[in-house]
Picture 1 (cartoon, one colour):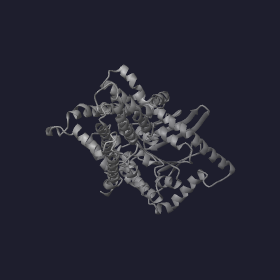
Picture 2 (tube, helix red, strand yellow; picture 1 turned 90 degrees about the vertical axis):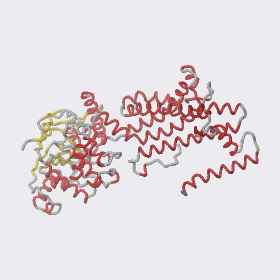
Picture 3 (cartoon, helix red, strand yellow; picture 1 turned 120 degrees about the vertical axis):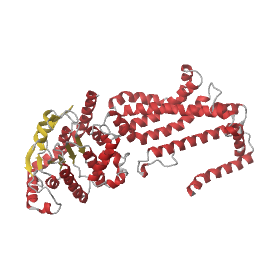
Picture 4 (cartoon, chains in turn cyan, green; picture 1 turned 135 degrees about the horizontal axis):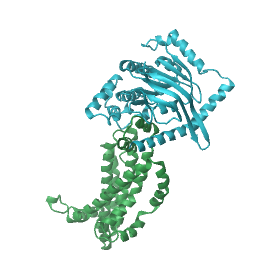
Length: 294
Length: 265
């Protein structure tokens, strides 16, 4: 399998007046074309930094990322992201159809745009809601719109940042199955960042387990489950349960030694502290990018 | 229909009460509403039928006044929105410009009328300058505020999809800021009316404001009151039109976020 995404010795350190914070230490992995890889790790372990470096929103302090062989410098042309917060990621002043068309305006004419958006909306089962505004839809349907928008863009890599963390359990199951179906039918390469262990096992062809801050890969596990998955039978299968337990063990889930508690607390605190630095860096890198491209 | 009656019933009732009070008091300074209405008709609506009964006074004084008001407000809107959006998207620019803006907006615009009289010629230029300077601030500051309020996720979404800069500004920042911009535009529109009158009270014999002053000096109180009523009607009409426009432009908003029909600024 050819590598669609390759990440080599990636590291990122945020600099500030009162010190530095290493969010990612030394990350290496690849994602093959057509593969769905889940990145799972504790909160505040640098998952969002990883996502932002891959999407080119932040320049890593060392290491290299390449997408289908091209080094990632700035935001790649053919990469799409589905964010956790669909209510903010969608544009409330545009209809569902126009939201999906929005990123296509720079590359496609009106008719092609319209056709592409209609097709993507059909994939996610929203053909009947194209004229509605996002706020008129349920949370799960809004996230479907965001997925359709990403798919219509025909990305080489689809990044998903905790995509189903803000919807209820029932809807999450539906959306997980939707993602698997779309991925299977259109051969999309997907990298899903999640903190939900069950979700990572259910969705993934492979799971990357990240350690706490600074993030590095503790394990790269192949998911030995049939491609066709089912919310009930797959989840009760032995392979699923075993893998789920293995990931949980790697993440020290449920263990509560004094040292672990202290580490978790420290992680959460530093995550909160450095979230600000991270956002600032995103807008700075983007401004530079604009200055050099224009 | 009942809401319409409720809204205007009180208004009509008060006019009737005032009619009775002025009739009882019989004071020259306070003519009866019917006398004011008659004066208004004679002043503005006794013209030839082929001009919709509008008199020369309407063409010579009312329309030029309204024209200056709209032109001044329009120029202020153009400067305010473009400058405001630019400032709102740049933290550094706002750091430098912030104190200056706060200082400038603190100056009462009528205090600058003497300055504008010196710098510009008496007449349209000076009047426009007064209106523009006076009404710019609510639009500018609301635009800054609105442009700033674009959330980080929309920013990152646009960055990831490599939305070109013009599309980002016109397609994301402006619509996101639109509710705040409209709030600024509405405040400024009422202010334009005030400053239009103020700018016509000095050094000119043209416009609704100057006609008011003339009527007062000539002890023509029904005419003076008619002018005041006209200003009220104008303000109401302008606000209604802008509100209707705003409703259309912001039709995408969920209902509970929309501006109610009777809004007090």
